[in-house]
Length: 407
Image 1 (cartoon, rainbow, N blue to C red):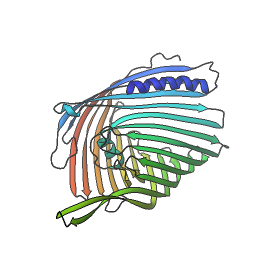
Image 2 (cartoon, rainbow, N blue to C red; image 1 turned 90 degrees about the vertical axis):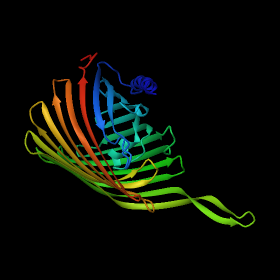
Image 3 (tube, helix red, strand yellow; image 1 turned 45 degrees about the vertical axis):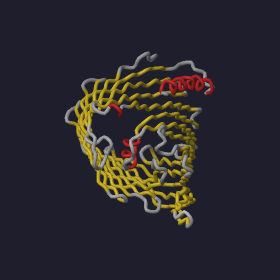
Image 4 (cartoon, rainbow, N blue to C red; image 1 turned 135 degrees about the horizontal axis):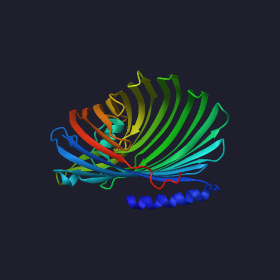
């Protein structure tokens, strides 16, 4: 699957150069490989409430970046493979991958376009925890995406951007329903100066699921971003969204068959439609207190579609602390809380808490060492249960110098 994707991407590179219509008189091409090696201990791999499964996990992650730049076009391919092996539970071994092919084209001083083609194979358990703070069954997921955006600069102050997206999600074991999604967006921006801007982001998407569920969402939010000084940056945004959900529930009719004296059960699929509205917002504050110490506070409320094809509201707040012990050694502490509620009758609620300290050491320009740990806790309602787990890890990263660079 991964090699087939790379072949298609290389073909797209040739097509892209052909259709841009650019006369290439000078260009820069480079290939930058890298590798990660990670060892982790996890005391509850499946995030189970009662039967926790612990193990040592070894990850071997080769990666590379291929880049071609001309006067008007930038074409890049980022690819990463992750071989994940469990010491005592080899049936959980898997291979993950993350690939992104990006074309940036500046047509003239006022017009530019971006095309992003991506392919990912991941695990639903870890991804759903990171994105929504909910516990999902650990299963493989294949995601394919295509994004297009175009930007038009009217003058030094006003610009417009808009585009569309296509998504497809596939679960090979059929535990969750596959999804097909399309969406469009529009974003006018006013730049008051280089450090002060505001905009309006309008978005609509339609997600169709294999189990006949459809979720459509329209949202609009006004945002403002400003560098208050050299050490303080603030981003604020607020808006409103409307979500329409159509799904089918199975209800049962019971009656007693008098002749045979048997209870007859007849399942009936009943169509349900719901409309949910609500406030959305985002907040980000970055502060550099000294040359060594900085903090970031982030909060938002978003609408999110879970793997079970259910619309949910997710509230996130997180704080990160960064401190440089030396020029080559730094520490980071991340604290995060998420509250998620499904937008259906008797919908599930969950609260997720994460604390993650880490230490990073730059051994030289290309070689990095980091180690740290995570504590995660989930409190779930309907049904009620509590889950938690600990993880500790060490990672070695080596980035090779640019190879085959022409400049």
